[in-house]
Image (cartoon, rainbow, N blue to C red):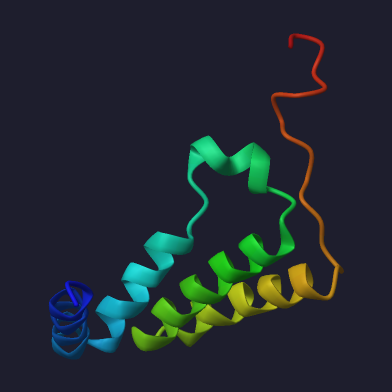
Length: 95
């Protein structure tokens, strides 16, 4: 029963937030942090999710020219037409 008040607060917060605020929160949640980069750089679901969330933010800001390339990147991750480039710090003679 303790979860219901928390659920109500969450629902109220969602209702009070704009679509842009929700999209920005989603983008923040799905963004790959520098600490997780090596672990997730080739994770197609994580990379596509990150790009779709960013595209949604741009779309809601009426910046479709910025949304489109991110949607194309997400599609590339999902259809396997793109892959993560090698890390620039690995493979060099100095490392």
